[in-house]
Amino acid sequence: MAGSIKDRVAIVGMGCTKFGELWDKGPGDLVVDAVSEACADAGIEVKDIQAVWVGTLFSGMGGRSVSEPLKLQYIPVTRVENACGSGHEAVRGASYAVAAGIHDICLAVGFEKLKDEGMSGLPGMENHTNTHYQSSMPGVFGIMATRYFNRYGLSPEEGKTMLAKISIKSHHNGSLNPKAHLRRELTLEQVLNAPIIAWPLGLFDCCGVSDGAAAAIITRADMAKKFRPDPVYIKALQICASPTSGRMTSEYDYTHVEEAYRAGVAAYEEAGIKDPRKEISMAEVHDCFSITEAVTMEDLQFSPRGRVKQDIEAGTFHLDGELPVQPDGGLKCFGHPIGASGIRMIYELYLQLQGRAEQRQIKDPKLGLAHNMGNEPYAPVVSVCMVGL
Image (cartoon, rainbow, N blue to C red; front, side, top):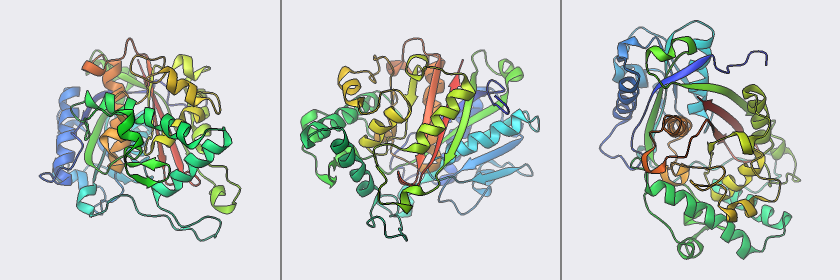
Protein backbone atom coordinates (compact mmCIF):
# COMPACT_ATOMS: atom_id res chain seq x y z
CA MET A 1 0.00 0.00 0.00
CA ALA A 2 1.47 3.37 -1.04
CA GLY A 3 2.55 5.43 1.95
CA SER A 4 1.88 2.62 4.44
CA ILE A 5 3.18 2.93 8.01
CA LYS A 6 3.12 -0.86 8.41
CA ASP A 7 6.18 -2.18 10.27
CA ARG A 8 8.12 1.05 9.75
CA VAL A 9 7.93 2.16 13.39
CA ALA A 10 7.76 0.42 16.74
CA ILE A 11 6.56 1.20 20.25
CA VAL A 12 9.36 0.44 22.71
CA GLY A 13 7.93 1.93 25.89
CA MET A 14 4.50 2.86 27.25
CA GLY A 15 3.07 4.34 30.40
CA CYS A 16 -0.39 4.99 31.79
CA THR A 17 -1.62 6.57 34.99
CA LYS A 18 -4.47 5.23 37.02
CA PHE A 19 -7.66 6.85 35.72
CA GLY A 20 -10.22 8.36 38.09
CA GLU A 21 -11.08 11.39 40.17
CA LEU A 22 -7.49 12.43 40.73
CA TRP A 23 -8.00 15.51 42.87
CA ASP A 24 -4.43 15.41 44.21
CA LYS A 25 -2.90 15.53 40.70
CA GLY A 26 -2.62 18.38 38.23
CA PRO A 27 -2.27 17.96 34.45
CA GLY A 28 1.50 18.22 34.69
CA ASP A 29 1.62 15.52 37.35
CA LEU A 30 -0.33 13.14 35.10
CA VAL A 31 1.97 13.83 32.14
CA VAL A 32 5.09 13.26 34.27
CA ASP A 33 3.70 10.01 35.70
CA ALA A 34 2.76 8.53 32.31
CA VAL A 35 5.93 9.64 30.53
CA SER A 36 8.18 8.50 33.37
CA GLU A 37 6.70 5.01 33.16
CA ALA A 38 7.08 5.00 29.35
CA CYS A 39 10.72 6.11 29.50
CA ALA A 40 11.58 3.54 32.17
CA ASP A 41 9.85 0.88 30.08
CA ALA A 42 11.97 1.85 27.05
CA GLY A 43 15.17 2.20 29.06
CA ILE A 44 15.67 5.85 28.08
CA GLU A 45 15.73 9.21 29.80
CA VAL A 46 13.43 12.11 29.01
CA LYS A 47 16.38 13.99 27.51
CA ASP A 48 16.66 11.29 24.81
CA ILE A 49 13.29 12.31 23.32
CA GLN A 50 13.75 14.29 20.11
CA ALA A 51 10.20 15.49 19.46
CA VAL A 52 6.78 15.30 21.12
CA TRP A 53 3.16 15.16 19.99
CA VAL A 54 0.55 15.73 22.68
CA GLY A 55 -3.17 15.07 22.33
CA THR A 56 -5.55 16.99 24.56
CA LEU A 57 -8.92 18.61 24.07
CA PHE A 58 -9.09 21.16 26.87
CA SER A 59 -5.53 22.25 27.64
CA GLY A 60 -5.01 25.87 26.64
CA MET A 61 -1.22 25.74 27.01
CA GLY A 62 -0.41 24.06 23.68
CA GLY A 63 2.88 22.18 23.66
CA ARG A 64 3.93 23.82 26.92
CA SER A 65 1.48 21.58 28.74
CA VAL A 66 4.09 18.84 28.23
CA SER A 67 7.40 20.62 27.71
CA GLU A 68 7.24 22.49 31.03
CA PRO A 69 6.48 19.61 33.41
CA LEU A 70 8.96 17.34 31.58
CA LYS A 71 11.58 20.11 31.38
CA LEU A 72 11.95 19.46 27.64
CA GLN A 73 13.24 22.78 26.35
CA TYR A 74 14.13 23.70 22.80
CA ILE A 75 12.78 20.65 20.99
CA PRO A 76 9.66 20.42 18.80
CA VAL A 77 6.48 19.90 20.85
CA THR A 78 3.19 19.87 18.93
CA ARG A 79 -0.26 19.90 20.49
CA VAL A 80 -2.91 18.12 18.35
CA GLU A 81 -6.67 17.80 18.81
CA ASN A 82 -9.03 15.57 16.87
CA ALA A 83 -11.94 15.17 19.27
CA CYS A 84 -11.95 11.78 21.00
CA GLY A 85 -9.23 10.57 18.62
CA SER A 86 -6.70 13.12 19.90
CA GLY A 87 -4.51 10.43 21.47
CA HIS A 88 -4.41 8.47 18.23
CA GLU A 89 -3.61 11.70 16.41
CA ALA A 90 -0.58 12.20 18.67
CA VAL A 91 0.59 8.65 17.93
CA ARG A 92 0.09 9.25 14.22
CA GLY A 93 2.14 12.46 14.26
CA ALA A 94 5.01 10.88 16.18
CA SER A 95 4.95 7.76 14.00
CA TYR A 96 4.96 9.67 10.72
CA ALA A 97 7.90 11.81 11.88
CA VAL A 98 9.89 8.68 12.71
CA ALA A 99 8.88 6.89 9.50
CA ALA A 100 9.91 9.94 7.47
CA GLY A 101 13.39 9.77 8.98
CA ILE A 102 13.12 13.19 10.62
CA HIS A 103 13.53 11.85 14.17
CA ASP A 104 14.64 8.56 15.71
CA ILE A 105 12.87 8.72 19.09
CA CYS A 106 9.54 10.50 19.54
CA LEU A 107 7.01 10.75 22.34
CA ALA A 108 3.24 10.60 21.93
CA VAL A 109 1.31 11.57 25.06
CA GLY A 110 -2.36 12.24 25.73
CA PHE A 111 -3.96 13.60 28.87
CA GLU A 112 -7.03 15.30 30.25
CA LYS A 113 -7.99 16.69 33.65
CA LEU A 114 -11.77 16.67 33.14
CA LYS A 115 -12.67 16.70 36.82
CA ASP A 116 -11.14 20.18 37.03
CA GLU A 117 -13.37 21.44 34.21
CA GLY A 118 -16.50 21.31 36.38
CA MET A 119 -18.51 19.34 33.80
CA SER A 120 -20.60 16.25 34.41
CA GLY A 121 -19.96 15.13 30.82
CA LEU A 122 -19.08 16.37 27.38
CA PRO A 123 -20.78 19.52 26.07
CA GLY A 124 -23.99 19.23 24.06
CA MET A 125 -23.99 19.53 20.29
CA GLU A 126 -25.28 22.44 18.29
CA ASN A 127 -27.51 21.69 15.34
CA HIS A 128 -27.99 24.56 12.93
CA THR A 129 -29.73 22.57 10.18
CA ASN A 130 -32.95 21.81 12.12
CA THR A 131 -32.84 18.19 10.96
CA HIS A 132 -32.36 16.84 14.48
CA TYR A 133 -33.44 17.73 17.97
CA GLN A 134 -30.87 19.49 20.10
CA SER A 135 -29.48 16.70 22.23
CA SER A 136 -26.87 15.58 24.71
CA MET A 137 -24.41 12.77 23.96
CA PRO A 138 -26.53 10.23 25.89
CA GLY A 139 -29.58 11.47 23.97
CA VAL A 140 -28.02 10.93 20.54
CA PHE A 141 -26.71 7.47 21.42
CA GLY A 142 -30.10 6.68 22.94
CA ILE A 143 -31.53 7.33 19.48
CA MET A 144 -28.90 4.97 18.04
CA ALA A 145 -30.06 2.25 20.44
CA THR A 146 -33.78 2.61 19.77
CA ARG A 147 -33.21 2.74 16.00
CA TYR A 148 -31.03 -0.36 16.19
CA PHE A 149 -33.70 -2.22 18.18
CA ASN A 150 -36.34 -1.24 15.65
CA ARG A 151 -34.32 -2.08 12.55
CA TYR A 152 -33.34 -5.54 13.74
CA GLY A 153 -36.60 -6.48 15.45
CA LEU A 154 -35.52 -6.41 19.10
CA SER A 155 -38.08 -5.68 21.76
CA PRO A 156 -37.04 -3.04 24.33
CA GLU A 157 -36.44 -5.82 26.84
CA GLU A 158 -34.30 -7.83 24.40
CA GLY A 159 -32.35 -4.74 23.39
CA LYS A 160 -31.67 -3.60 26.95
CA THR A 161 -30.56 -7.08 27.94
CA MET A 162 -28.15 -7.18 24.97
CA LEU A 163 -26.63 -3.86 26.04
CA ALA A 164 -26.48 -4.91 29.70
CA LYS A 165 -24.37 -7.93 28.80
CA ILE A 166 -21.82 -5.63 27.16
CA SER A 167 -21.47 -3.60 30.37
CA ILE A 168 -21.27 -6.73 32.52
CA LYS A 169 -18.44 -8.08 30.36
CA SER A 170 -16.49 -4.82 30.50
CA HIS A 171 -16.92 -4.45 34.26
CA HIS A 172 -15.61 -7.95 34.79
CA ASN A 173 -12.48 -7.05 32.83
CA GLY A 174 -12.16 -3.69 34.58
CA SER A 175 -12.36 -5.36 37.98
CA LEU A 176 -9.10 -7.11 37.10
CA ASN A 177 -7.31 -3.88 36.16
CA PRO A 178 -5.61 -1.84 38.91
CA LYS A 179 -5.52 1.28 36.71
CA ALA A 180 -9.26 1.37 35.92
CA HIS A 181 -11.48 4.02 37.52
CA LEU A 182 -14.43 1.68 38.16
CA ARG A 183 -13.38 -1.75 39.45
CA ARG A 184 -16.70 -3.35 40.21
CA GLU A 185 -18.47 -6.44 38.90
CA LEU A 186 -22.10 -5.91 37.84
CA THR A 187 -25.11 -8.23 37.70
CA LEU A 188 -27.74 -8.26 34.98
CA GLU A 189 -30.34 -7.11 37.48
CA GLN A 190 -28.22 -4.12 38.54
CA VAL A 191 -27.74 -2.94 34.97
CA LEU A 192 -31.36 -3.40 33.91
CA ASN A 193 -32.72 -1.64 37.01
CA ALA A 194 -30.27 1.28 37.01
CA PRO A 195 -31.60 4.85 36.64
CA ILE A 196 -32.26 5.84 33.04
CA ILE A 197 -29.99 8.53 31.61
CA ALA A 198 -31.49 8.67 28.09
CA TRP A 199 -33.83 5.82 27.18
CA PRO A 200 -32.88 3.02 26.79
CA LEU A 201 -29.44 3.85 28.19
CA GLY A 202 -29.19 3.50 31.94
CA LEU A 203 -26.43 4.55 34.31
CA PHE A 204 -24.33 1.46 33.62
CA ASP A 205 -24.64 1.87 29.84
CA CYS A 206 -22.65 5.13 29.99
CA CYS A 207 -18.93 5.66 30.50
CA GLY A 208 -17.76 7.97 33.25
CA VAL A 209 -15.81 11.24 33.39
CA SER A 210 -12.22 10.73 34.53
CA ASP A 211 -8.75 12.22 34.72
CA GLY A 212 -5.80 10.37 33.23
CA ALA A 213 -2.76 10.30 30.94
CA ALA A 214 -0.99 7.77 28.75
CA ALA A 215 2.24 7.88 26.74
CA ALA A 216 4.20 5.96 24.09
CA ILE A 217 7.85 6.03 23.02
CA ILE A 218 8.09 5.48 19.26
CA THR A 219 11.23 4.67 17.28
CA ARG A 220 12.33 3.24 13.94
CA ALA A 221 11.59 -0.45 13.45
CA ASP A 222 15.24 -1.23 12.72
CA MET A 223 16.26 0.34 16.05
CA ALA A 224 13.53 -1.17 18.19
CA LYS A 225 15.35 -4.19 19.62
CA LYS A 226 18.14 -1.95 20.88
CA PHE A 227 15.61 -0.78 23.48
CA ARG A 228 13.83 -4.01 24.36
CA PRO A 229 13.57 -7.58 23.05
CA ASP A 230 9.80 -7.44 22.55
CA PRO A 231 8.87 -4.19 20.74
CA VAL A 232 5.37 -3.80 19.35
CA TYR A 233 5.09 -2.69 15.72
CA ILE A 234 2.46 -0.38 14.28
CA LYS A 235 0.61 -2.15 11.47
CA ALA A 236 -1.91 0.54 10.49
CA LEU A 237 -2.97 4.08 11.38
CA GLN A 238 -6.08 5.41 9.67
CA ILE A 239 -8.38 8.35 10.38
CA CYS A 240 -11.68 8.96 8.60
CA ALA A 241 -13.48 12.31 8.93
CA SER A 242 -17.20 12.73 8.39
CA PRO A 243 -18.77 14.70 5.55
CA THR A 244 -21.41 15.68 8.19
CA SER A 245 -24.07 14.07 6.01
CA GLY A 246 -25.95 12.98 9.09
CA ARG A 247 -26.56 16.60 9.97
CA MET A 248 -27.91 17.35 6.52
CA THR A 249 -30.63 14.74 6.31
CA SER A 250 -33.31 13.46 8.67
CA GLU A 251 -32.97 10.03 7.00
CA TYR A 252 -29.68 9.17 8.71
CA ASP A 253 -30.19 5.60 9.92
CA TYR A 254 -28.20 5.66 13.21
CA THR A 255 -27.65 1.89 13.09
CA HIS A 256 -24.12 2.08 11.78
CA VAL A 257 -21.28 4.62 11.60
CA GLU A 258 -20.03 4.81 8.02
CA GLU A 259 -16.80 6.49 9.07
CA ALA A 260 -15.97 3.60 11.42
CA TYR A 261 -16.60 1.09 8.64
CA ARG A 262 -14.41 2.99 6.19
CA ALA A 263 -11.61 3.60 8.69
CA GLY A 264 -11.64 -0.12 9.44
CA VAL A 265 -11.50 -1.06 5.76
CA ALA A 266 -8.55 1.31 5.22
CA ALA A 267 -6.72 -0.05 8.27
CA TYR A 268 -7.28 -3.64 7.16
CA GLU A 269 -5.89 -2.84 3.73
CA GLU A 270 -2.84 -1.17 5.27
CA ALA A 271 -2.22 -4.09 7.65
CA GLY A 272 -2.97 -6.75 5.03
CA ILE A 273 -6.00 -8.15 6.87
CA LYS A 274 -8.49 -10.21 4.87
CA ASP A 275 -10.71 -11.63 7.65
CA PRO A 276 -10.81 -9.25 10.65
CA ARG A 277 -12.73 -11.58 12.93
CA LYS A 278 -10.26 -14.42 12.42
CA GLU A 279 -7.00 -12.48 12.15
CA ILE A 280 -7.37 -9.90 14.93
CA SER A 281 -6.56 -11.21 18.40
CA MET A 282 -8.27 -8.49 20.48
CA ALA A 283 -9.77 -5.02 20.25
CA GLU A 284 -10.20 -1.89 22.34
CA VAL A 285 -13.08 0.18 20.91
CA HIS A 286 -14.74 3.47 21.74
CA ASP A 287 -17.45 2.26 24.11
CA CYS A 288 -18.66 5.66 25.30
CA PHE A 289 -22.04 3.91 25.56
CA SER A 290 -22.89 0.22 25.41
CA ILE A 291 -24.75 0.67 22.12
CA THR A 292 -21.60 2.19 20.60
CA GLU A 293 -19.67 -1.01 21.25
CA ALA A 294 -22.47 -3.12 19.77
CA VAL A 295 -22.65 -1.08 16.57
CA THR A 296 -18.85 -0.89 16.30
CA MET A 297 -18.61 -4.68 16.32
CA GLU A 298 -20.62 -4.66 13.11
CA ASP A 299 -18.88 -1.62 11.59
CA LEU A 300 -15.48 -3.28 12.06
CA GLN A 301 -16.80 -6.52 10.53
CA PHE A 302 -16.41 -8.56 13.71
CA SER A 303 -20.13 -9.43 13.55
CA PRO A 304 -22.51 -9.51 10.55
CA ARG A 305 -24.99 -6.63 10.33
CA GLY A 306 -27.81 -7.13 12.79
CA ARG A 307 -26.17 -10.18 14.36
CA VAL A 308 -24.04 -8.76 17.16
CA LYS A 309 -26.63 -9.92 19.71
CA GLN A 310 -25.85 -13.55 18.91
CA ASP A 311 -22.11 -12.96 19.37
CA ILE A 312 -22.68 -11.14 22.66
CA GLU A 313 -24.79 -14.00 23.96
CA ALA A 314 -22.19 -16.55 22.79
CA GLY A 315 -19.42 -14.80 24.76
CA THR A 316 -17.45 -14.09 21.59
CA PHE A 317 -16.03 -10.86 23.02
CA HIS A 318 -15.19 -12.14 26.52
CA LEU A 319 -11.57 -12.47 27.69
CA ASP A 320 -11.69 -16.18 26.88
CA GLY A 321 -13.81 -15.72 23.76
CA GLU A 322 -13.01 -15.88 20.07
CA LEU A 323 -12.23 -12.14 19.86
CA PRO A 324 -11.81 -10.41 23.24
CA VAL A 325 -13.03 -6.80 23.28
CA GLN A 326 -12.20 -4.26 26.02
CA PRO A 327 -9.79 -6.59 27.84
CA ASP A 328 -8.84 -3.70 30.14
CA GLY A 329 -12.46 -2.67 30.86
CA GLY A 330 -12.74 -0.03 28.13
CA LEU A 331 -14.05 3.51 28.48
CA LYS A 332 -16.83 1.93 30.53
CA CYS A 333 -14.44 1.27 33.40
CA PHE A 334 -11.67 3.79 32.73
CA GLY A 335 -13.87 6.76 31.92
CA HIS A 336 -12.91 9.06 29.08
CA PRO A 337 -10.20 11.69 29.66
CA ILE A 338 -10.39 12.51 25.99
CA GLY A 339 -6.77 13.03 24.96
CA ALA A 340 -5.62 9.99 26.95
CA SER A 341 -8.16 7.38 25.84
CA GLY A 342 -6.69 6.42 22.46
CA ILE A 343 -3.20 5.88 23.89
CA ARG A 344 -4.65 4.05 26.90
CA MET A 345 -6.23 1.60 24.47
CA ILE A 346 -2.88 1.01 22.76
CA TYR A 347 -1.25 0.59 26.18
CA GLU A 348 -3.51 -2.40 26.90
CA LEU A 349 -2.79 -3.97 23.50
CA TYR A 350 0.93 -3.41 24.07
CA LEU A 351 0.84 -5.19 27.45
CA GLN A 352 -1.23 -8.04 26.05
CA LEU A 353 1.14 -8.59 23.11
CA GLN A 354 4.08 -8.73 25.52
CA GLY A 355 2.29 -11.13 27.87
CA ARG A 356 2.23 -8.57 30.71
CA ALA A 357 -1.52 -8.15 31.27
CA GLU A 358 -1.57 -10.39 34.36
CA GLN A 359 -5.09 -11.57 35.26
CA ARG A 360 -6.47 -10.18 31.99
CA GLN A 361 -3.90 -11.91 29.78
CA ILE A 362 -5.27 -13.23 26.49
CA LYS A 363 -3.83 -16.47 25.16
CA ASP A 364 -1.12 -15.94 22.52
CA PRO A 365 -2.24 -12.61 20.97
CA LYS A 366 -0.58 -11.51 17.72
CA LEU A 367 -2.54 -8.46 16.53
CA GLY A 368 -4.60 -5.81 18.31
CA LEU A 369 -6.94 -3.06 17.12
CA ALA A 370 -7.82 0.22 18.83
CA HIS A 371 -10.78 2.31 17.63
CA ASN A 372 -11.78 5.87 18.60
CA MET A 373 -14.87 7.81 17.60
CA GLY A 374 -14.97 11.55 18.14
CA ASN A 375 -18.09 13.72 18.19
CA GLU A 376 -21.57 12.32 17.72
CA PRO A 377 -22.45 9.33 15.49
CA TYR A 378 -23.75 11.41 12.58
CA ALA A 379 -20.68 13.67 12.23
CA PRO A 380 -17.71 11.80 13.67
CA VAL A 381 -13.98 11.55 13.18
CA VAL A 382 -13.02 7.88 13.54
CA SER A 383 -9.49 6.53 14.00
CA VAL A 384 -8.23 2.96 13.87
CA CYS A 385 -4.76 1.93 15.03
CA MET A 386 -3.46 -1.63 14.69
CA VAL A 387 -0.39 -3.00 16.48
CA GLY A 388 1.27 -6.38 16.47
CA LEU A 389 4.39 -8.44 16.92
